[in-house]
Length: 228
Image 1 (cartoon, helix red, strand yellow):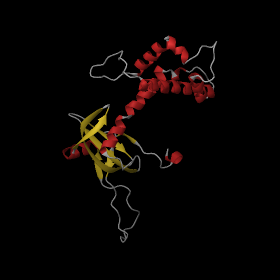
Image 2 (cartoon, one colour; image 1 turned 180 degrees about the vertical axis):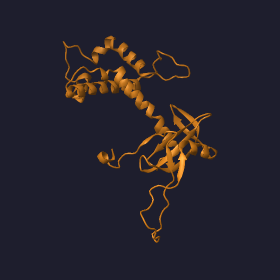
Image 3 (cartoon, one colour; image 1 turned 60 degrees about the horizontal axis):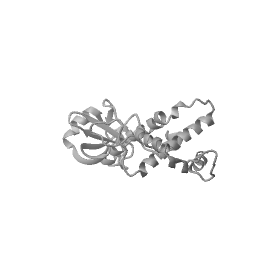
Image 4 (cartoon, one colour; image 1 turned 120 degrees about the horizontal axis):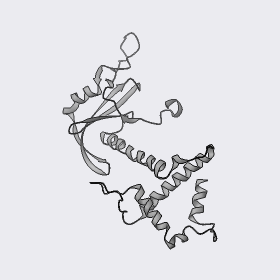
């Protein structure tokens, strides 16, 4: 990836509990006449689990916006070296009541709050992929022509965008069809159901005109030109 896009991106993910961490190498003085090349890695710090036990007493409370709510988490950070990436990383240990999780990023300028919130936002991306593939049907394309597959994906992405644009403009949140205890937000399928009900009304012909009375400036024609 670095050979393709250079240094324009950073990684943010979760560390394995048995990953071995190393301290940053000691800065060699310019006047030092030590033979050999400078060390790339410092002292071996042990595994991620070892560091979690050692740093647990140094945690502090942080307010983070996670999964739609402001939550208080206990976390601590440390900048270390990772041999698999061959570069320094910032590791953030997040402690729960009985468990903990270690997140890392190659962007050393990110704060603890940013690392936790960015990692938590990844679930929304996964939900978007599910909506695009299963709810809209991008994975059900039967064409074997490359351009046709691309066009099919563009139509699916357009349908997803229009659905969320509709959800952003409605005054009241739709009723959740499959209710979940402790969850008040609506789902993607609930918005699709509202659009399906609206399409059956008589006023829908004003937006999508019948083939017997075509309109050049209809919304459908504009969206088709955007996809093309």
